[in-house]
Length: 198
Image (cartoon, rainbow, N blue to C red; front, side, top):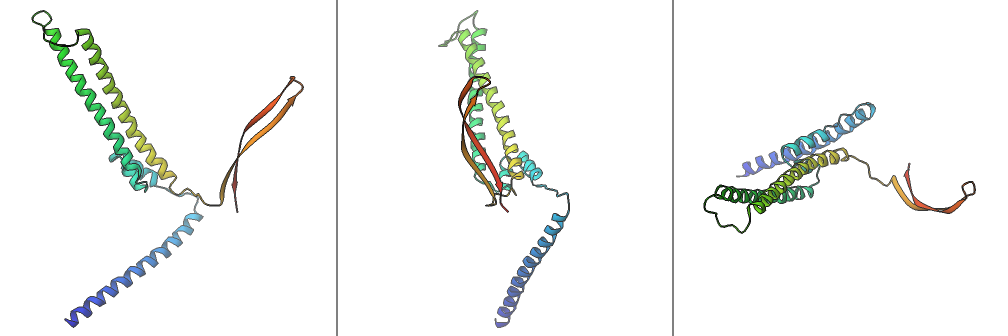
């Protein structure tokens, strides 16, 4: 029992040592690589491409890749709502179409009981089809927006928002007297000042 405990404790300490050694070595390599990257003129950034690919294959995966976890439920909520509206309008379209066809088929013979006339059913059927197609287009646009959002977030992932960057917004007022045109008046607006501290 003593030998087993000593053996496992040695393995445990060896694992801890190797983890610390590997993490220190990785930090040293990263520091060396970052100096090389700063010296080179071209830096390849695969993050936008990976985010776009992930969001194309699985909507919301690009947002998770960019660590914007809160956006994923919004994306799936939008798809759920749009899917429900497509399903509902498609069912209404199918129902109105079937009633309309039955009414047209039996217009010569015995009429079926319907609270709507044939013309009203045609309007309802066309409206439900138009709504269904509209929500399909919106769903495709939502899918494209998911991909674009992942790409933009990936491009801005390493964007520096430190105290060295400042933006000052201030109102602008100027009383203008233009004697040549015979006009005078107050001019107002906003001025935006960007500064980079060193």
